[in-house]
Structures are given as structure tokens and as C-alpha cells.
Image (tube, one colour):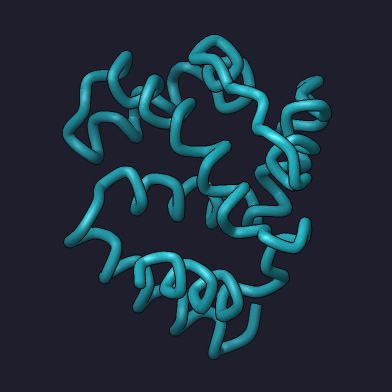
Length: 129
């Protein structure tokens, strides 16, 4: 990751933290797993290819269940994130299951995810307008 990507990620994280804790949680997850592509790779490896393709495609999005979220990211890691963002574990997992499909769908209007932190930031800001 380049210097600009690092700065862009830091700025986006600070802006997100003040506005929406789930946005910040999503950004933290993406950062931890190597960006949106890393998150989707992990989800595909865990058998969620149809779900991922629906979020990237132009049709309706397949849902993500709480059980799938826990299976992909692990109960302990999710519990730590829930505490970090001052949520109960069940509430956090439920919100993440709702948030991820929508976020991926909205970040990939052309079926492709941003390839850098800077592009991710630009797309995320454009969605906030």
C-alpha cells in the first residue's frame, strides 16, 4: 500500500468514526483482511460465492445471515470488534450481516471493487453525497 493510500485510509477512518460506528467497523474489517477484495476472497473461501457474486452483480442481493458472518470472521474476533464499537455481540453481528451486502453492492456499481484505499475512499465519499 502506498503512502497516499495509507493517508487516505487514515482520513476516511477518522471521518467514519464520528458519523457511523458500523461504517468504521466495516472499514476496519476491510483493512484487516486486505481491503474489500480480501474480505470477498475470504467469503468465497468459506462457500459464499453465490452471495458475493450477487452483491457485485446488477440483480438483487442475496442476504447474509448472522451465522454466515460468524462462520467467516469468527465469534471471538467479532466479539472483540463489538466491544471496540460499544455494541453487544448479537447486535453487532446482525448489523454486519445487513451492512456488508449493501456496502459491497454500493462500492461496486460497475461490478468491480475499488483496487486501492484511495479509490475506496473516493467511492465511499461519493455515496455519502
